[in-house]
Amino acid sequence: MIGVDIVALPGASASALSITDDVLLAANRLSTRPRFTRRVLSTASPRTHLRGGLSLPTRALSRARARQLVVVLGMGAAEPDEVTRMLAAPEMAEATAWLRKAHARGAQIASSCSGVFVLGEAGLLDGRACTSTWWLVPTLKARVPACDATLAQMVLEQDGIWTAGAAYAHIDLMLALVARLTTSALAAEVARHLVVEPRASQARFVVPSFLAAHDPLASRVESLVKRRLASPPSLEELGQALGVSPRTLSRRLLAATGLSPMRLVQKLRVDAAIHLLQTTRLAVDDVAEQVGFEGPSALYRLVVRQTGKTPSAFRRRA
Image (cartoon, rainbow, N blue to C red; front, side, top):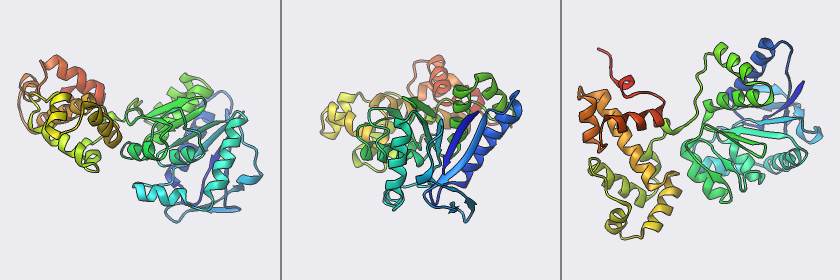
């Protein structure tokens, strides 16, 4: 049996707890024998209050030795200021010290959404590839400069540290853990019974405008590119127009949006193409021309890469 510790700090996400339980219970029912046993730990015991007014009985984190897998529930922080307040909570020091010890003893540590910041506070993301809620990835990079954070991946693992995207990426995380700790066949069976499609990337959910709005330079780049979608300016042209070096521009865009200049331009063009597909009857060739792709095949390739769907899937049905 694989022992799972669910760390539910005060105010943690009730949905993340439910998703964790649903996946583990489904895996046990669908396997030839039960594979997982779980317990819920917290800095607050014997009861912990979750977000939304729910509460549940918990064991004391300080008196527990970590099992094979530790799942830290997301904390529901959706803005940088909320992340700061969350990490300043009095229980955070105890939780992060326990997580460091758990990983040093060989436990796999996993979290999604804002729970990833708890791992960062514990120093477990330093030098490692990781992800989080896509719009908080720039905040994660700023708080944990030693991490290698990306907003594109849905789930990432390095050295036994597992991270995933926004709230409902938690199910992708749990399925990936089932696949790694048991078999990929069992994980696929669990996904079928829970009616979950595999999602390898967050890229199709990213809204560049939302990210760029927090940085004046990135916002100006977005405006310049949108005005010239059919023939986007080069990095050198953008730098010249904005009075900064290409290197500085690349660094600022990556910090603000989590995307390189080329990836940002591609994302803006694909988003514009999808908008045209959804709102007009233009042929795919004409859509590709309007947003600056060499032909429909290039558009097709990038739409599939970023969204997992073909261009025709975005056509509105009459």
